[in-house]
Image (cartoon, rainbow, N blue to C red; front, top):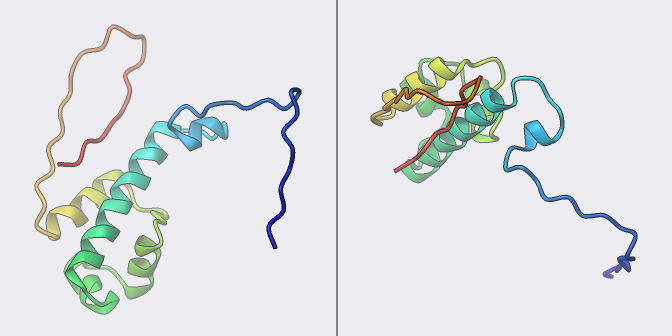
Length: 113
């Protein structure tokens, strides 16, 4: 049974920034978003190849429970560098570009082809 809720004029809707980690006020939000996106890419590759978690663990050089976490988009304590290592082990090229910024602090982003 569906329930509906009337939205009154006093209800406020706030548009997200595109980074849920920043929206939640978590530290290192850019880094956490990058880790989440890299982890998602790894999970998509594993799924598209139809690999078992045991097969993926051998390729990535980690234990099966860690593969399980990755397939559920949980980066855990894996660093960005380690996630990049996983992508290269899966036959992906990873390119990092550093450019100057006019801002006080730079930002991180990731693009998948």
